[in-house]
Image 1: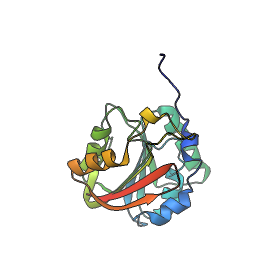
Image 2 (image 1 turned 180 degrees about the vertical axis):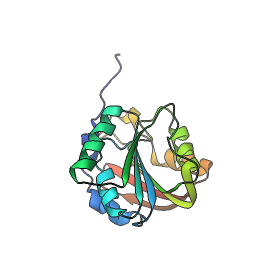
Image 3 (image 1 turned 30 degrees about the horizontal axis):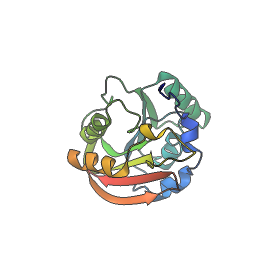
Image 4 (image 1 turned 135 degrees about the horizontal axis):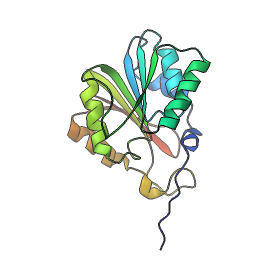
Length: 184
């Protein structure tokens, strides 16, 4: 049986999510330094940068074309508090203990090393910093990536707890996607 190589496009991941609703739930404050891991085209990066007007947003992605699209989106609305950085060799291009928050929408399940990505976020985060993860429910539905490209919520939570994160809240964004908010 041939392998299914279907992958959802980044835009398809976000079709059902209102970034303003996500912003309302996040423990983000206007002066914080945050990272958008797997920023894609800047779908969340731009609203984050508008919100943290006295802070800093690092938009990180493993695909230079996605970073270029994010840069274009940032320039279009004249934001100056955002930097784009290439995520290479499984290492976040950030210093230790500089982040107040980390955000990853659909990035952990897609990462070559999911646990390594979470460990890198942990390394870059200050004590008590927040981590928000959005992923697809591991259920066979018409929307989203194939089932094998999803990460079970319990599995993701265990992985994060093993690294040292503690769960503060869980949200069902819709029938297809969940969001976990944790603290370091």
